[in-house]
Image (cartoon, rainbow, N blue to C red):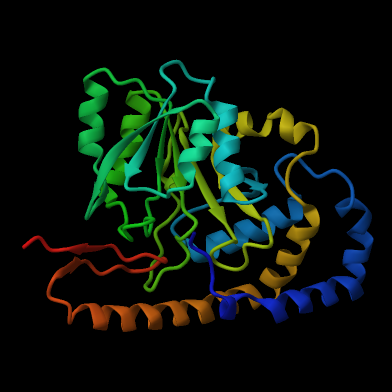
Length: 310
């Protein structure tokens, strides 16, 4: 499982945030609200803070608080999307995954009674042309699950042409796209690749999933979904959220402090320097290995290596 190394966990920053919350008068005034049941999509103040952060990192996109839902991590969000949407469209109970893909996601889909079908990944990401051939042959699917930015485990990113084509196919063949973007902020270069949902259009079909687990701390169980229009309205009506079973407002308050005082951005810059340095060390060593095949990556946690055939 990909997770930040111990020297990249924000122990002191989190401790400082707790202290700020303990002495901050404005926070004390909100404490009763934070200890009560939360808004369906997550605390409004935190969603606004988060969308401001998104719009800073993704200046070519426009995201509002109404487009964001806060949930306890990316895995929860993926399960939540599938369980709530799998009966909303007609067709088979098939989910397309990239081959290879994030290994632990398979059990989420199996647990929900979904059938998994793999489509190969190449240097441009998910082969949407092969997907289109399957769809034209009559395959009925409910979801495409993709890691379009710094893919796990190959490290590749879905090309812009294929991003556009995948969204077009979702309209033509009536399926949802779950875009797992937990690595998208771990980029070694600018500009960042925007959330796939920000390229979506009516009828909306794309849910972008993100998390603080890879970029800050997996112990703070905070993730999000970015979706638009009626798709977000449908997700927000989930009985799980209506009954108060969603996100922890207190964890959001901790992150809100860290985002507002720039501690989060400074931390992300620091860990990116560490990851990039480690990547360069590995890359330089691998270049000396003549029996291996691999391609450079621009961010994330993964580098895919193949042994050359004799």
